[in-house]
Image (cartoon, rainbow, N blue to C red; front, side, top):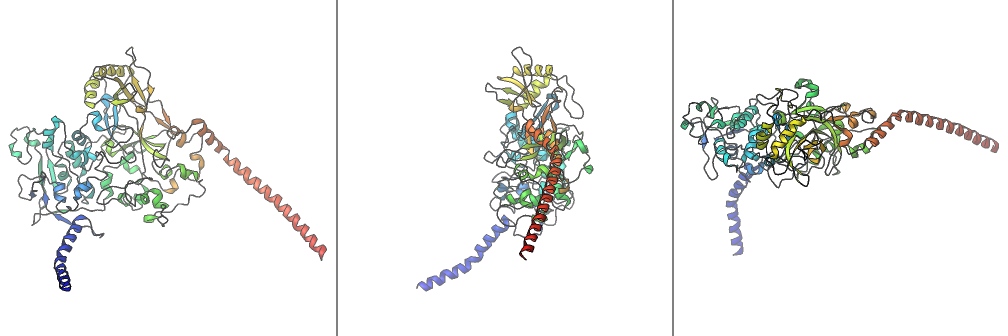
Length: 636
């Protein structure tokens, strides 16, 4: 009996097994790749945006009006297992606004600038010391997306529901900025991220991804539409002035095949060009805006690409590549400079990954590797007596239509600034730096909070309406009398004492209504973030062959000047020396550097002393040999 039951169960399992395997296989296929290095071909249908719980509408060549496709709806048709989209949206490029995500090492902030009010303020949803959350200055997620979504791959603030009454209906018109997978993964040479940026600035959030695709074009502006506009019924717009501005999608002829599918030329091997749109910079001090004058990172000229080091899985938790990074990936420690070139502490021969040369660092004292990051010697521009100034994609809208190409356009970012890092790995590291400039209030416990930007524009803008903003986008010069006038105007709006932070100092009014002398304050400290690129080849590393490149009384590494940046001309003559950012004292740094003046003499004296000692030892050795010879002769 038992044998019969056992046989029956075995037979049943045989019949059921194919179904189980199929279900398991289906889940695996829909979840991740199978390990092949071949590119997956994406010939798939397009789907329009759909509310939660609603069935997605398939877009075809006959769909009228032509609708923008939804990245979430289109990609999720296959990538459904484990809710892949919801997993991806927690990745590093999208999770800044999540309250429980670790901030990580400070990075480049979003910088709001307004030359008319003397404002240059670093913003970030991440808890990076020295930055302010957008809501602290009255910027909602909707407004933040409109301002900075041009250099974001969608998601994050772009998908958050606005709580501002005035923006609720606007968001219904504009839609949300879903994660645009094409921003990184589109391998089509005709992909146009500048069109994505242009549509975001026009509040065409739901159309932006479609506009970036090679097979579609978008015209019109959701920002111009009335709050009753429905993108599925554009014909309801009757105002003749608005009709030309109706957001309209046009798909290229032959975009849809005989099955109404569309070919997406996407790749997991992300091209460096996709990274460069958001992560480019140019040394305007040395090269102006002419990129042909600047050398590329040595890794790129060697045939590598960004994602060789900055890898990620389905979770999109991108490896940033700094020492001490803890993002849960075993590759994080191996993807730093030290991890690739020297190996990690696992004991396995990890050094020389991807063909990286293993440096010997002959003659360099070990203390350098304890106190300096690899990038201190190998990355960024060669330090000069005055820190250089650069422009970046995120801060200066590089690559977008109509960006300001003037070298001195705001914000003013200086580099390299050699500062001692804070955190688990406290080493001297090269940084980029901005001096914040903003209007705020000072509490009784001496804490500074920025005034919301709407109030600044209304109140301070009115008080400073006489100033002239240069066409180049540089600072409009401010005088202390004008600062006093603006602070008095803010006094009627703020409950606490109004202040102006700029150039590393703080301005406030005295009891007599006059501006007090500027004073140092923690809120006025420069904001810095570490840099790693561009990496110079070993032959161009800092100090190669000469200690006095750094260890001299006039070296740029220790005594170079980082000018104070401010619309107040009397402050720009000041600044800080590099050694101050390293927590070192002037006297000790100068004395140690001065000692290197005598280092060549020490070498001559040492070599001479060794030679003399050698001669003396040789003479005594010969005499000893003679004495031994005589003793042996007498014995014979």
